[in-house]
Image (cartoon, rainbow, N blue to C red; front, top):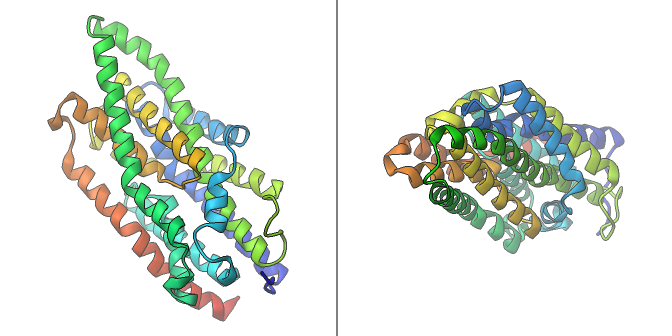
Amino acid sequence: MQAIHVSLYALILIVAMALIFDFMNGFHDAANAIATVVSTGVLKPHTAVAMTAFMNCVAIFVFDLHVATTVGKGTVDPAIVDHYVVFGALVGAIGWNVITWYYGIPSSSSHALIGGLIGAAIAKAGSGSLIASGIFKIIAFIVISPLLGFLLGSIMMVLVSWIFVRSQPRNIDRWFRRLQLVSASLYSLGHGGNDAQKTMGLIWMLLIASGYAADNGHLPPWVVISCYGAIGFGTLFGGWRIVKTMGQKITKLKPVGGFCAETGGAMTLFIATALGIPVSTTHTITGAIVGVGSAQKTSAVRWGVAGNIVWAWILTIPASAFIAAIAWWVGTKIL
């Protein structure tokens, strides 16, 4: 693939925008990782955020870069990628993140980024520029990841109920307050491993297109370190508007329920990251929380709130794609 000409100024600007998006991803999605452990009273918000940020960064030592490869080389034809496409994708993702954060809607930063990439690519070269197999996997997991989270969360809740059926509630609460520290840490590890890699993939795409990285080479280490650092730093600032929705409005959680939801969500993220599929941590933990609530009793879930969240999921890709298409056109005029 022939390298496009990109001024150093434009390249630095777009990489900085990507890291800002990664920061916002941590900021926006921090609530997913801490909502259960905060709402159950196991940790204070600032302590939970610090733990989550640390585990986001530890993911650098745990996961291979399969998700970054999918985003960087498996969603859009590399031949049409240029700095305008990446710029449009980032503006679309950041714009939708700001809108949903402002209204306290736990939407997916991941799918906002994918939607932005789709919108910018179609604006430049039409739908033929999309790699169908990669897009299909991502869209399929919009449904699969919350369902898998739901299934694993509910199974965990049923198993725990059977195992501790004769135990005193006070003892169960004490033990699961401790265990929830482990489950929240694992979920945060999975969150960092899957989400930070999406931004890495986008930067990698830009570097390959502009000739600063080889098409068949490895992801530059500075990209890996800066993306994990950005998402961890963003997590430190938290997404407080979304914590209440995730932790209390969907269903009331106790430590045992928080443990089961986080463990089910973590298992889902570990599986998806190993398969190289960029999934939504928001979708995953929401499915797990609903699974835990419904395993107790169906009426424990506020289905109206869950339904509103689902509508946000449905709108995320088309809305971010629309913003990105406009941003791509604007980018061609100003960059």
